[in-house]
Amino acid sequence: MRIGFIGLGIMGRPMALNLLRGGHHLTVWARRLESMQPLLDAGASGADSPAALAAETELVISMVADAPDVEQVMLGENGVASGGRSGLVAVDMSTIRPSAARAIAGRLLAGGIDFLDAPVSGGEVGAIAGTLSIMVGGSSAAFDTAQSAFACMGRNIVHVGDSGAGQVAKAANQIVTGVGVLTVAEALNFAARSGVDPARVREALLGGFAYSRILENHGQRMLDRNFKPGFKSWMHQKDMNIVMQSAHELGLCLPVAAATAQMFNAMVGSGLGEEDSIAILKLLERLSGGEG
Ligand code: NAP
Image (cartoon, rainbow, N blue to C red; front, side, top):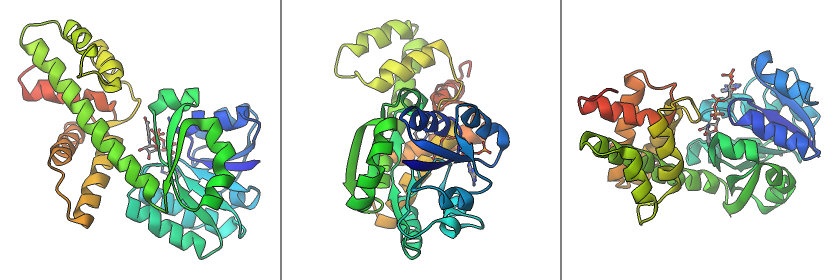
C-alpha cells in the first residue's frame, strides 16, 4: 500500500521504519530534513509538504504532538486536506483531546477524506518492536483500510468505537499510567527515605498485588536513575491536561488524575519537562528535602 507518514520523532521514526519493513511504499514528511534522513536512508521517498505527500498516497498517518499540530498538518496551508483526493484515509496516531479529534474528522470528511483517531500505548520500546497497543476511533471502512498498516506497528489493535473513541481510550490509559508512574515514584522514595533499599522493596512488591508493568519497567529505570526520554514529561503534562479538559467538558470528578496533573505541571515548571516522565521521582525527592 502507498502510505504517507508525517512526524518522525521518538515514536514516529520507528513506526515508519516498521511500515517500510512490512513492505509498504512509504513517503515521509517532517518539518526538519534531519528528521527525515534516517527514513530516506532506509528507502522511503520524501515529500515537500503534507499536501504533496497526500497527493501520492492512499493512507496518510500523522504522529506529531498536540491538537494544533494535527490541525496544522491535516488542515493548514499545504496540509493533507489540500492535497488529498476524495477516498483518502487519514489517521492521526498522536495523543490529542477527543473533542479535537472529532472536529478534525468532521472538517476532513467535508472534503471526502475519512479520518481515524488511533493513539498508541507502549512507548518507544513498543514502537521499535512493533508491539504497540493501538486504540482506534472512526468508521469500520477506514479501519479496514488501515488494518495492514496497523499490523506492522502494533499487536493489540482495538476498534474502540466512533470518531474520538480511540482518544477517549488513550485518555483513560493516561489516567492509569500517569497515576501509576507517580505512585511507583512515591513508593520507591518512601522506601529510600525510610532507610530501606528501594531495589529490594521493588523486588518484594513485584510478586504481589502491587505488581504492574510500570513498577517493573519504570521502577527499574527510576532505580537506575535513567531519565533520558522515552516519554517526555511535557508530553505527559499535555496528556493529563487532555484528561482534565475532557473532565471539564463532561462535568466529571477525577480527583486522583487532577492531583497527578498538578505534579506534571510542577515538573515542567521546575525545568524537568524534557526529561522522561519517570523524573517525577526527582520532583518528589525535591519536595521531600532529598537529592532531586
Ligand atoms: P517527539 O519525539 O517530540 O516527536 C514529535 C514529532 O512531531 C517531532 O519530530 C516534531 O518535529 C513533529 N511535530 C510536532 N509538531 C509538528 C508540526 N506542527 N508540524 C510538523 N511536525 C511537527 O514526540 P513523541 O514522543 O514521538 O510523541 C509523538 C506523539 O505520540 C505525542 O502525541 C505523544 O503524546 C504520543 N505518544 C508518545 C509516546 C512516547 O513514549 N514517546 C507513547 C505514546 C504516545 P520536530 O522534530 O521538528 O520538533
